[in-house]
Length: 463
Image (cartoon, rainbow, N blue to C red):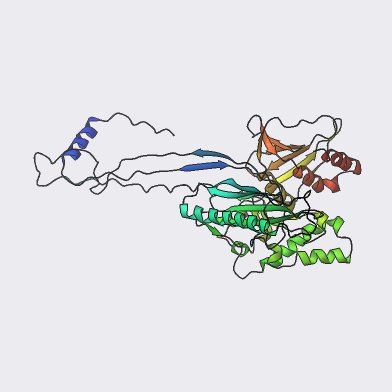
């Protein structure tokens, strides 16, 4: 930061300053005014994560992102001298050598109110607990989030102590259960893998996903559990789902209707008879347990349903993202969703890059699809290197994002990399599981031919 230079002092100003120095009266220095500006870029990649412990009563989600965090920190300190008490310029010197019986009236200089210190976006980083249980060879790696950069150290300590406690409880529960499976064998040691991803972070809230994968020795397969935590970083308070809505409104009924409508479309292949229809209805019923795994993303309210909750194990952990506009009549105008409600979703057009001699197919996303895509893109971690380049045939999806009054943004999504003109040279956003490409293909199925769909599906099998 630079400070504009002041022109040279005039004779009149010099005379006034000397008089002020020699005039008797109280004088003191003002307190320094300090501003801090903290900016952070975080990115995390997700791997199977947290399980066990009292905080995991349900089996909910596995999401895609997690990983390493990159932090940029800029601190600016401005020191200022000002008048205080008498309203006269502050100087050095003693009493005047000649006393005056009627001193001239002092001129009071208004003291500007200090600018509020900008609230910094919290810095989310990871800590790890890992080890091997010697008796069985079981292993655990528990990576859990910790927050930095908060203005109130007490709030940071409250959040971090809580999150560390959850991680320690997961390890205790895992190690206590080892050896109780009669099918356990030395060739199939139990394992616990925990990691986190950041759904959103801002000065007003931090929303975290903690995912765990547990394999019990001798089991046919492991299981994933997702737990979510949303905090007010200014106070350290953990927010409940009810905190997002007006008191007394039937928000669970609205969430159930929205979730059921989305899942009937995205999981149509799993809902084939009376039994599976009832399964979906039970898993999306308006109960607190069914909507326990919620997070706030830049696209809206994200809800994850656990393994076996709405469909068979092979269906995984379905995710729905509800645009805030769909909940506008219910949300608390002073709550965490209010900021999202004031910023409408953009218009998004997707083009499938497939042809070289004729136009490629394109379509416009619905607001539900936009909400999910915005949340996905915001959570992708940064990567360094050269992004894959396409050739003939399938060469990725092009996404054009349009907001009123702003320049269009264009993203290219291809083979696990998301690039845009705003990226630093030699960097891109990493999507190793190709979840964004898969999601974009799903949004375009009704706009594409069977041959076009097959071309993309074939390429998606390449990891």
